[in-house]
Length: 342
Ligand SMILES: [Zn+2]
Image (cartoon, rainbow, N blue to C red; front, side, top):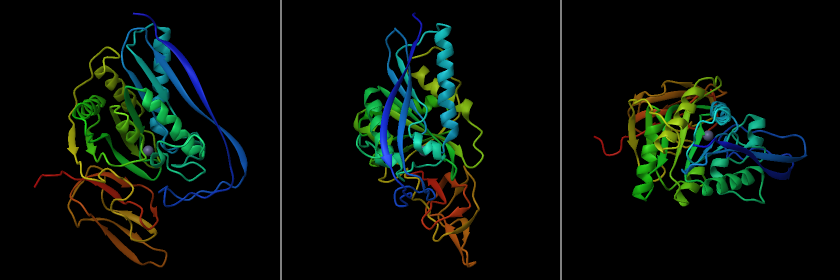
């Protein structure tokens, strides 16, 4: 076996943007305003590690949303690991490409969306002549199309918290779907969620259309984002073991699988919405089982008017809102339904 070689490749995006507010219809996070006018140069950085022996090309990304810090730290941890392995000549079969921060302008704002107010996970495949987010989406799209397999790391950001899970779309190609299921199992998180293949604009939509087997990962979130770097790092290594890119065995873990191919399933920003703006007092926790009609929380408006949000589904709570300050239409929680079970 020959040593891993590494290279850092930079893709430069240059844009000019003026003062803008976050487009509420596109980005579910709070409005932001960039008060200065500036010319901005954004570097989408990737780290490529390649062994001389043959094997697949795996792409791992984080920072599609700028306030998801644990996944970004995990990809940086992987980069350090492979850099160290390169110096110690540990063999790698194939090639791994790491993109720690896809949406750099959003990261600099510590916000889900960049200064253009666009959610990168809604504008894929992007536009090379568009705004920063559209350009980054375009660049990510090229990376995905050049890969054999893809893992996209997320969390709930500052506003939401998500049950640690590996997800994939219910791909119409049975072979790709089976590979995605195996990748999700290999990642080793306790919950696996297969959802609708008909959602567009996501990184996984690009992978779906390019027939690249892909999974996305979610891992907690909220204001205190400290847990999960090691689990995410180990999960990526587990996928690499499944793909035969590195040696070793992953520990067997107990995992629950829910697959829901119905159109629109897996859209986390529209479930169980707040009926009005106000302060949220949430009644449910991640992983809790709820039934249709159960109280999920109460919203109290500025004039003291209150409204209870009732569950619209029966199943497991996989996402909860951590931000107490809600706008009308903000998702309070997401419930994974066990389709076909009575
Ligand atoms: Zn995300």
